[in-house]
Amino acid sequence: MAQYRKDQLESNYYYHIFSRSIAKYTVFNDGEDYSRFIEIFELYRYKDFNYQYSKFTRLDPVTQSKIIGSLQAENDVFVEIIAFCLMPTHIHFLLKQVSDQGISKFMSNILNCYSRYFNIKHKRIGPLWSGRFKSVLINTDEQLLHLTRYIHLNPTSEELVVKPGDWHNSSYNDYIDISNSTLIQYSNLFSISPKEYKSFVMNHKDYQKELSKIKSLIIEDYTG
Image 1 (cartoon, rainbow, N blue to C red):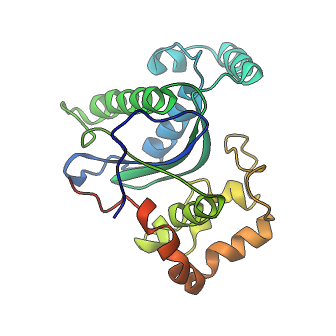
Image 2: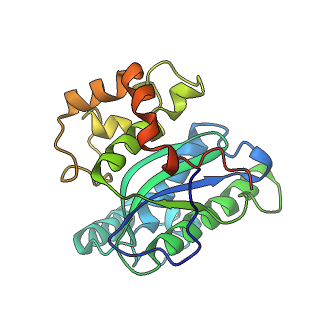
């Protein structure tokens, strides 16, 4: 069973990060919800993004572009995002912490920001997420690669789609070169081509066989 770190997360290490909605409540109801959450974490990974997201969205497009361009040029981030998958009731991240307390600050910012958006949109009050996010330290490059596959196969495992590429709320399509996102930081981690990665993910038999290599890193079934 996964061991949950109670001490401070360390910079320059990789972590599987997981957060579930309170009482397994559906927190992503439509494409707008998914898109909003992705936009939020794309911006709040930058340490110098000091805007309330709702106010940022009201700026004119030219000003928004200038702010984003400046953030990208500086590239001063809390975390590097290696992989992610958004599910109706929970989220998975594979993150590298870049700055001290970076993961905690990043997760606090994005979960709180999305909660405000969701509660206003759906006219509800109260918490949206079930306590503090869970984290597991990744110890080897092999675990890192296999964990990306586990994360990307979540939508097919829960029968939301037939193929992982059909789920547009994860980083899978970035890995196989379908999209042109510059968000995902993985190119220097794995000596594997997009074609090879696709085969690696789609080989369900091998996936089941290799699952034991990362079982201590899987925290989706945590119910505490």
